[in-house]
Length: 447
Image (cartoon, rainbow, N blue to C red; front, top):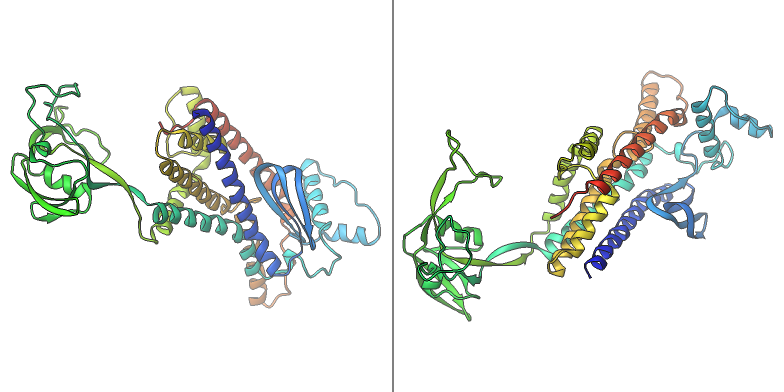
């Protein structure tokens, strides 16, 4: 059953990623059609086409490899004057001289020209005002951000956050002296304060020492700060409130910092403190959060992911180095779709309530959409951010020409940047390969 659950988790993540990709491409498709651009294809995935159907002028389909998607817009770039002249004369331009990159530029221009319907085609991307081109290119990443906000809102406001409540789940029978590793009570062990006070499982602690408490943290804070001091607790049982007298037992515990590490003094000895304990184990429940928690969490995740992606080459190098050194990976470092699938499988097969596993998968998918949002905003072709930069540069050139009373410049020909795009693409493939290999050999694990 555990293997089946693991596979189900991986499949659910793949489906979730396919939905994320579909929404990303819809974010490009909807404004493109709204602005009158002719869209030839809307495809989810790469490779051989599994299914497609044409509606109007657009072919909608699904391809075999669900690791991306695209829409094919007419005239992403302006036509090449030489090629347009040759096409008008019914001639073939042949291969460009100059080697590999020059050939790549020509091929990109030829592929772009095939989407044009003559030199005066008005329904092309490059003829749109700058702001419309920016809206189209930002539409995809924004859809990923909105999907992440929806998933986080569903997680925090629909399901809730698992929180320790003031409801008593169980009571310890005794207080085991510090330093002993046993877990069973001996005859000489004193009774736990909560058991001695008559507190029972199912009781809800509503007040400690005259102070109302709503969370387990508030309750334990008051008890820990009162070792050996009698306290009055008000508990609710069977719909009625009753008062009980409880004296927290005094125990020595190490002082810990914000990261849970033991604090030591100048001599390296562990610093301890005397705290009070009652022997109460709390009951956990899902507590729904305010509706703004989802968007707030999404924004916080954007900042965290941006910090990783901006240093992506360094982070990938450090991750890949663990293949040689055998060191543990940074849990906050990058991972591939394989690594994400492993985490999804572990979440789905964990020994936890179904709701916990659903919450884990939603959190993982939301985080991946944040990563898609940030990654696609990088100002590099072929990413969406690169196309935004090209559009803005075109707008700057036109604005400067207008300010200086010069003729409008020719549209920016981004096909000249194909060699740069190729280098970026190869770099992304190499980094993706390193992450996939690391996720197979030295995967991150929740446990």
